[in-house]
Image (cartoon, rainbow over all chains, first blue to last red):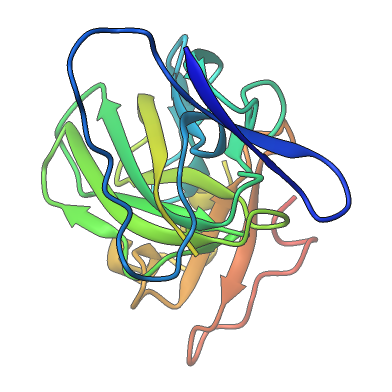
Length: 169
Length: 55
């Protein structure tokens, strides 16, 4: 394996390595300023409800998400606050899903950033489930995101929530 | 439940009064075991219920 080591001005280094495989490949670096993303600075997570939770009628409720499929940067709290607080700033794609036990009433879904709904909630009439997707900027330190929902009648709910950094700041 | 108590106090309230973003009342539950609470009360004519009324 051939490598190039780039030393930092004061400390540290970055090693660029080429695997010892046959063939010739090309990596093109764009002629513009930016940050190269690698897997370790692109947080991604996926979590879901391990059991249903009773939602009170017409009350926006944070969706408990107790089980993780994956959490590459340990940024998702699946124990206390059920929130994602990424430590890398940038624009994240978030996807949320809610399922209610019946389809008798209106339901609303929203991502809450730092305690407030991001834009208008998605509203569905007489639905027992729905998806919400948004690209949201996160500052990489204090910003956090949660999945919330509302149903027109008291009933059980479960959900799923996932997201990933799609570009840096 | 908080919603039921509010409706008992103000039976003329409609479900849409609680839907966001246009509803003037926002009830929330943080799923932290502390229960439902009034996060926003901006109804133009009805006063926010007191703690005594909600007992």
